[in-house]
Image 1 (cartoon, one colour):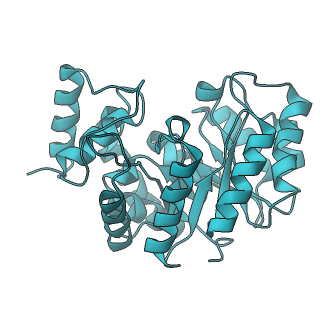
Image 2 (image 1 turned 45 degrees about the vertical axis):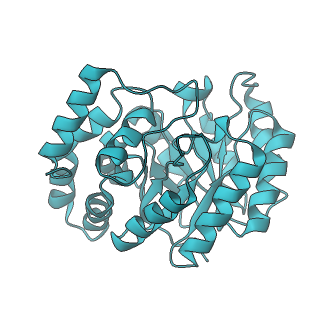
Length: 296
């Protein structure tokens, strides 16, 4: 599916597991249906929220295959091909494209991190070999490094660099790189608590954890802003801050998987080293979900 005009709410989908640790494909299909029924504009698999870093290659590909087949071209599917090894990212990207994803998410190399020129060539090595739109992923809190302004400017000129997921949490950084946005290079917020502020700088929507539990709300917020109803979008952003903050009161995706389990959509299962929430944080999350109308 052509995703070049994709805007709005792209859900960063969780990967549901069974009690034995295997992937729960029935629950995964149920989540896809939930998003298609509630207006989600695009689906990202195998990102941070999808726990890909704790999964095998075969599991990654089976998740991607399941989602691509279930979506059946109704919305774009983006596959996370990130790695701190450039060769591994290239290999994973090729496999996901073969499975039919519509785009790729490419993260900065974590742990070994690299210097500015190394990060540039890490991205271009993948961009040069694929024929699908790619989203650069800037999340220094996870990776320990950022995509420099100079690299954003250079990478934005690449025909396969379709956009950037900006998750630094810095309005200053977002403002700086927003100067390189165009019809061919878009920004999506990677932070659910500042979607509307980033859209005011030119972002076209969000790649969202919040959307896992409230897809219709996040879709409408983005659609309202893009339609010019900034006041309605701002209200949705501010009215849901308690829920958003609760979804990140422990490391993602622990709270959002707990929330989806409370909603009856998945079992609350994680891959270690992730672990169930502390009791006080779980109580906070439940209260926030009730306040947002997600629980009876």
